[in-house]
Length: 137
Length: 160
Image (cartoon, rainbow over the protein chains, first blue to last red):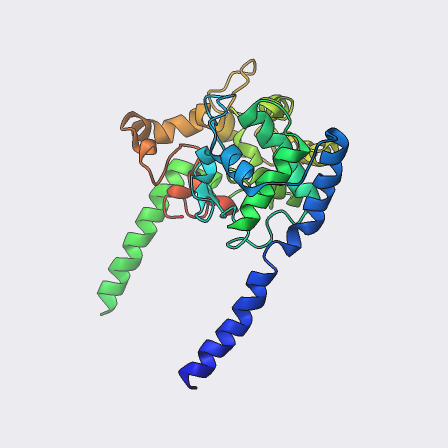
């Protein structure tokens, strides 16, 4: 098999994957967008930048989990580790494509982790920003 | 050749025998866990064997999932009902549990965690004293799998 053919096949597989990065997350994001609009009239879309700041911020609501990065590390393309030592798949959609595709699972973890880390439920805007950031990596 | 094989087999049998003396059937008598329990309770840690805590401990843990060892681990009521039935049915004080698990636990005691149980501290006390669980690869005494490779499947023998 010649190298050019191999490279061609690899590109053919990679390009569509890149083009559609985040497409699988669209239904979940659309639902949060609708909710964000109803929560605040001034809602003007999600922002990966805001999501990044939120992810890296020290919320300090609890000593055990002051930040998302406590378990997920500063680099969402890397694996994280729970406090009990279990590996966590990377949050970045490019590394774990099925992240943020199961609405029920997404809501379960935002409910738990926002309460643990931020000390309150997250807004739809914060959830959408977070997913937008993870889908941008 | 033969004597060497026999000697090797003898060694293996001795080691396994010693592990059995320490752990007894505790190491293997773990019933197949409930799928809801495994799905919901093994994201952060392994699905710990139900028989490692008495019913009263599981009830307290399930009743305070909003403050679960420093994290919120709340469940849907449907999952909670099914997990509660499973844990209660196979807890340390249920019919199918190894009676040794409850040794030295007073009936009035409600152990908050497995690592408080005498059966656990008896075996792991020296490791605790040496801070063996602080090693980065272990991270926490809750991380059974760091040393017991088969822990997620209920195997806790010295050679699992």
